[in-house]
Image (cartoon, rainbow, N blue to C red; front, side, top):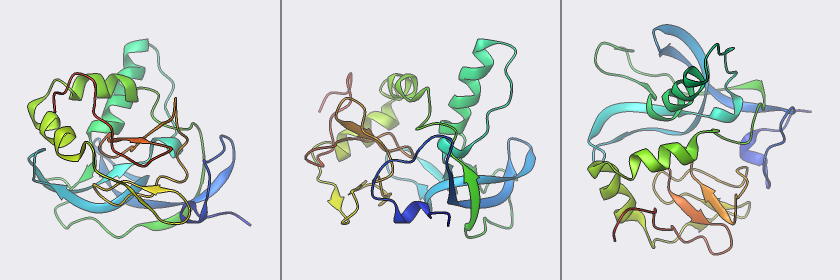
Length: 188
């Protein structure tokens, strides 16, 4: 039997198959069925992103072969920064609800999340976002912490150095206390 992600009480295992929420829509110029994380939403406040969108779940995205190291970094930057969205002529009929599909876990998270944190911490919209959530308490749903920003369950995301980074909007949550931490370079 294959476990659904929303039933896990611990991190995913690389190489193992899970039932993962997926959405079929246009992304990066192609119709694709992609793994998503969290609810469909917009980010009007602070981030000024008015388009409805889902974030891609990097753990279940199969990376193409890369001929150059910079292509690898750009691909993972796209995974983080280019959500599956409506607007600007993309998916004009909206985005469907996710369908649970069998997917293989390829990694524990986006290998460039540190670089993304570094880049976003210099952007005024993202600084507003990080300041707004720093010091807030994440809820615990009986399986693990839930990100307070978009209620994304984090039980299946492993902590790194005692911190769980939400894959959607990069909030850093103390794995022991559930407090949202400040981001280096962003003043409170």
